[in-house]
Image (tube, rainbow, N blue to C red; front, side):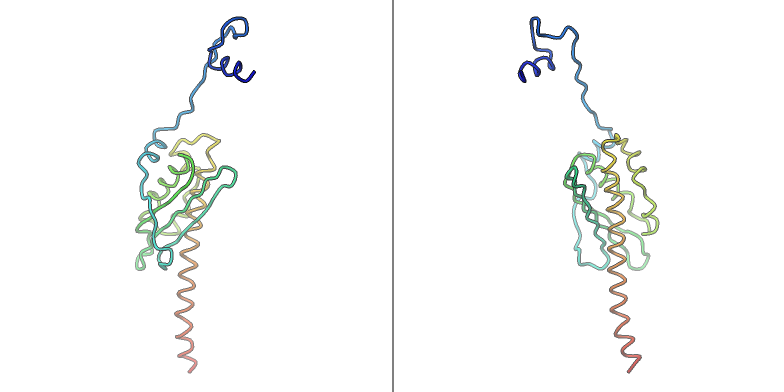
Length: 170
């Protein structure tokens, strides 16, 4: 039965069992921007996660198995993002979303990158509705990376302030 159904679907069945109308199989095509970022991903790699100027965002979508790690490197003086990289395990749309996100965050402040929305990434890549979760992961990864670097800096500033306070108390 399964073999006959497969043959019908592919239009290979003959005789009375064959459907009189042809079956058309339409391929799903990715937009050229997705293909470009998938075939030529930008900024693949990783930074030292212990560097206080590096923020790491690790997010995933258990429903589809996509996992995205996005890292940003901040210039101490200007506070702007000087570099970004990613490693993504997932579909072409997830890889493309990560690649676009790393390009878009470079040269911006942490406040500016928090305004990047998944809808902008999805629109740029022309993602279909079934792949919107990939652009949501990219937005979440950016937010997580910014939160991580801010937490590191707060901890570093807090630990530096403590010895100064102790010296002032003495």
